[in-house]
Length: 279
Image (tube, rainbow, N blue to C red; front, side, top):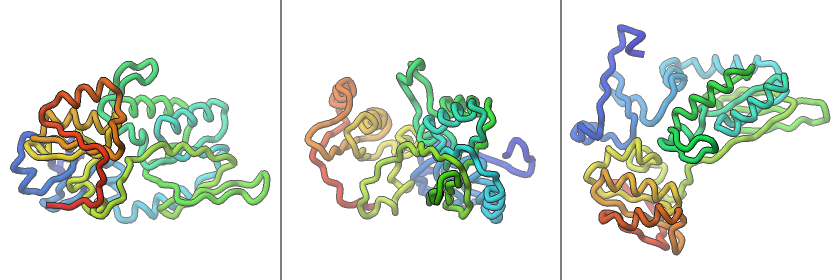
């Protein structure tokens, strides 16, 4: 935005380098955006989300546009890899295809390294999401971003249309609906978790890890994701405590061997987290 508009100036600060800025501004998640010195947003945002925050009538305009959409032959809910694949194969059949999701790419966008995606030994989440979008754009697919399905209204009789209501208040119609909603970050559902989300409770060690340089950090979960996070954080923070609810770690053996070899990582099994507190 700053490059395109000379009236907008922009300063990016690396929290891993300028720790004092992180502390002074109480930054607990990245990216954190300040507009004219005031807190504007925190966490990953697309350009569409930013515009929606700046244009207070953007949501109403979008709802009106969606309500005016003609019915789809197939409407896919979820715009991650599975949704993108469904959209490509539907569009190849020459049928009217819609693809709706909160953000194109889904949880892939929050992953730095992706390994052993068949035929791709290693890539990055953002690159994979860009490739998926490029593939979908090769076909006549109506991509609808920044929308969450809130209700399914099945057709009342054969040959009639199903309806999807969105959280924004719009209604989309389709002859067939494919649900490819994928996965979400697993929550512990304990007091304080929502209160401190992006304020110390985060989901991306690569993004937010540098903010906690020299501090004590806890990682919840002993599967591949949790153990990989503990390994990555061990090189940045002072100490990592890895908590697993079951009697043993569930990660691959090679990852378990690596995390157990790190001197600044403690592993606690049969752990029970009952509350998240802030300091």
